[in-house]
Image 1 (cartoon, rainbow, N blue to C red):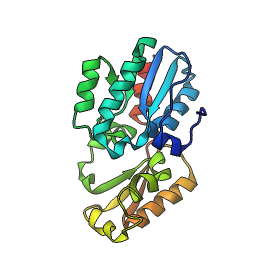
Image 2 (cartoon, helix red, strand yellow; image 1 turned 180 degrees about the vertical axis):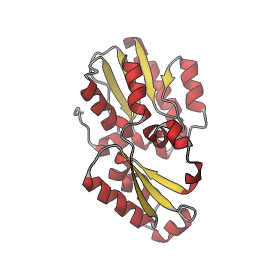
Image 3 (cartoon, rainbow, N blue to C red; image 1 turned 45 degrees about the vertical axis):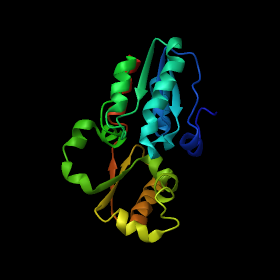
Image 4 (cartoon, one colour; image 1 turned 30 degrees about the horizontal axis):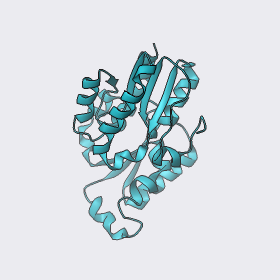
Length: 213
């Protein structure tokens, strides 16, 4: 697979590891572009990346066994393995499995929290009615939201699914007018108010800097 994989591949297949570094990151495919950007910017040539399919998030119970399998498969070849997932709907199971395996993982309940910064995200609990998208999820909106929820076939379901939501918050990792326009269109399609929030990489950047060091 190319060094800069396409979103469809990251959604369905993931990204196999490449290189012979000392540290392996086992990550969600939805984070591949951000991790690769941080690797390039910081010259982290000693870090390799393997991404699991991003669509595991449609079945959170599959995340923990998939991560455990990847750790078992590759840990002997690396000085350190680090898991770039938050809890991601596993109900604490991923954290417990990582402890059992002796590997660390990113702190936080989900990527929306660590992209904004876990402390900052926790400071506005009133946003329980917000629906979040990241750069990846804006690009893959149809694959992760529209089609899996059946809204392409049964648009009337929208008002039932999103009756208790008030706004869509686009957490922008980059500055891209085309993505901004697409995110605003996602909000329109869901019947929600739109808010753009420039988060950058948040705690992902500081966490990986520590791991790289």
